[in-house]
Image 1 (tube, rainbow, N blue to C red):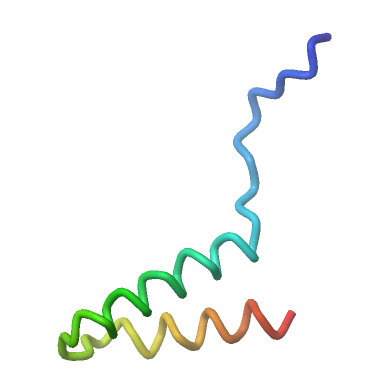
Image 2 (image 1 turned 45 degrees about the horizontal axis):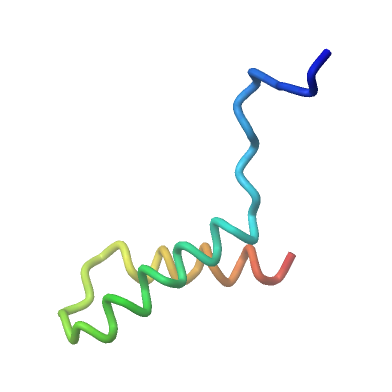
Amino acid sequence: MFGISFRPRKPNPAQTAKERLQILLAHERAGGTSPDFLPLLQRDILEVVRR
């Protein structure tokens, strides 16, 4: 009727990749040690970008 949808939005893969990349960059700039999740996060970002 008014164009309002109550269904949850499907996350945009590009936006998700952008947010993950921002997390990676912020962590690298902080100079912290690399926890186990960062390599996994990097792989996820590369996978989304390849699509």
